[in-house]
Structure formats: C-alpha cells, structure tokens
Length: 352
Image 1 (tube, helix red, strand yellow):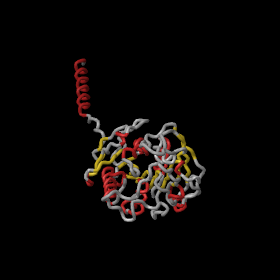
Image 2 (image 1 turned 45 degrees about the vertical axis):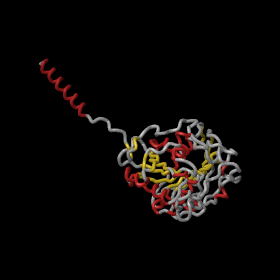
Image 3 (image 1 turned 30 degrees about the horizontal axis):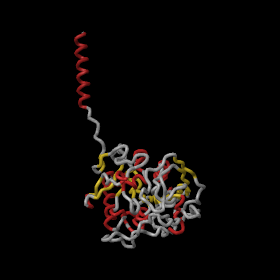
Image 4 (image 1 turned 180 degrees about the horizontal axis):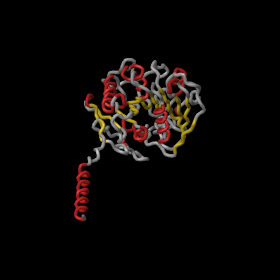
C-alpha cells in the first residue's frame, strides 16, 4: 500500500512537472509597427534641465513610404489586440523638433492610464512645408490604423503647438483625409476657432524670437492657400476643440467670454473658470540665447495654476474649452496636472 501511494505521488509529481514545462512562456513585449514599448517612454527628459542633445534625438519609428523619415510612436505597453484607443497626432511648432514637442505636451506620460497612441513627427527645417509633409502625416495615420485596426480607434485628435496648431487647422480645413477622421483638435497657442489672431494674441516684444514665417523653405512646394489657415473661419464639420495658451499670450482683455465655435456646436454659455494646480514644472522651454527674454514668449519652466473655461452641454457630448496657464507665455512646457486634465477632456468627448 505504501509503495502504491509512493508510485501515485511520484506519478502526480511527474505529471505536474511535465505540465509546468509545457506552460507557454510569457509573451514578448509588444512592438507596435516594430517599435518596442517602454515605461517610461524612450528618450524621456529628466524632471528638470532636459539636455538639448536629448530633445534633438530622432524618432523611434520610421515611415517607409517617405524615405524612412523618423517620427516618435508612443503607446500602452499592455495594449491588447482589439482594444479601443485614442489616437493623437502631435505636431511641433515652427522652428521646433519632435522630441521637444513630446515634452512640451507630454501626453505620452499618460499613455497607459488613458489608452493613448501618440505619433509625434518632425517637419524638416522645423516647419510643415506642404504636400510632401502632408503625405508623410497621412502615411503615419494609415500605418497606425493598420497596426491597431481602424475600428479600434475610438477617437482621432490633432494636437499642435503654435505653427503646428495652424497646420492642424489647415489640414482640417483643406484635406479630406483629415476632415473625415478628426474628432477633436487641441490647439496649443495655435489659433482659436472663431477668433482672429490680433484679437486674442498679445504682441511679442521686440528682440524676442519671432513667430515662424509662413513662407516655406527654399525648394518647398506650399499647399494651396498657404501653410496656415485662418482660425476665424469656422470649419464645416463639427468636432471637439480645446484652446490652451499662456496667460501672457492673451491680450489685456484676457480669455474671450464667448466662442463662435461653441455657439456652432450648440454649447451653453461659458462657465465660471475652474482651476488646476501644479506643483511640478513642465519639462522644456525655449533655452536659446535671446536678445530680449520676456514673459510673452516664455521664461523658465515652473509650477503654476491653469484656469479652464468650459462651454458645457455641447451637442452630442462634444467638448469646447479655453485654457489660460497663469503667469506663463508661449514656450514653457505644460505641467503634468494640466496635461492630464486636457487628456481627461479629450477622452470624455463623445464622437457620434
């Protein structure tokens, strides 16, 4: 009897060992479009004093349809097949670069929490030049759609700082590819829908770096209608819209009290502002030598408070809001809490 029991136990142990040996090993890390995932995201700035040789590094993905132009691709490392995501195309401003933009609007820090896929490309010469760049942006969008499944993109947002915002607006106004896809636009000092620039933007003091020229570099072919669109002309297709700027970028009148875009979308009147406080600074700023450093263009990164002016109850659950980051200008990178609040607003928007 004892020998029988021992033989049974030995058999059970051997079976268990054999089963354990047959258990599949953990799946290798996800590599969307061949880009390995990492937490924190690759080529990430430290909390302070981000070095220029880091922000100037090229992207971690390439576009084979555009001579392998590099761009950054950030996505949740635990992304599941068939999972719904929010896709953001994040465009830098004139004279800027992709990894600086990743840290100016650092939504990549929240990619796991809010299920974001973020592509941050680079315009050669620091400017979005026209047809060739536009095709590169379409290629990126189509590549991401193919990798995650077009039906799994529950919302597609354009985000852009300064000239990147103006470029976003031009794509929305003139390019059917983007018109049929866009669910929202985050304009980071890149034009406010329904407003002329001179009506809401303070003049930059002389000696400060000028805004990017609307003229393309030599040899570039500008798109029909120029490189920027007039934000005061409202698009036909409705979508959610968030406008953010530093307090010092607004004119003395401050944040406008009305929004033609909110009216078009059937939103209620502007609500009393709510505040988001940050105890941490953003990652980046304009560290170039400047003849006349000033608060309109922007100073060093630092903590602060942002005021959000919502236009509630928009038709079909869309979102419209204006944001002023107090005591900030054009180039201080966004702080973590206001960045996360913008993301919350983005993912809360309905997309009928």
